[in-house]
Image 1 (cartoon, rainbow, N blue to C red):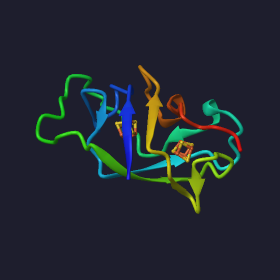
Image 2: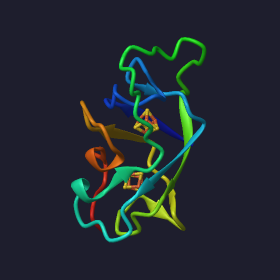
Image 3: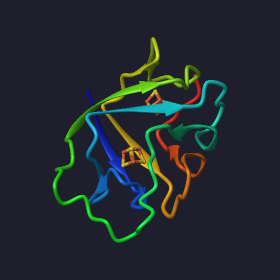
Image 4: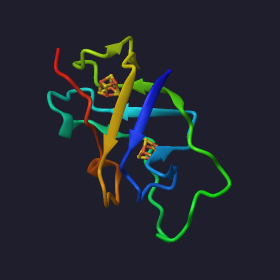
Length: 104
Ligand code: SF4
Ligand code: SF4
């Protein structure tokens, strides 16, 4: 389980810069840099005003990750103690990235 901070406040699952999902998937099977990764679980909050009031942010998440070039990736699972997903203002998954990606 990994602690996750997420600045993608345009995502439906975001509350107070934390994620309300219990598990996410990070994409980027060919990634060699952070910008080539993204949060595959991103869903746009189209109304913009919806607040995730009925769900609480998760302290720790399971993170499946396709970015196998990252040092924290083991068998397509993230083993980092803490990661950051960034992409303020994102309107699609491709605008987000795992800022913690580190090339092997
Ligand atoms: S972008 Fe990903 S990590 Fe961030 S709140 Fe949305 S689903 Fe969770
Ligand atoms: S730190 Fe590495 S293994 Fe963990 S989610 Fe980010 S890219 Fe994937």
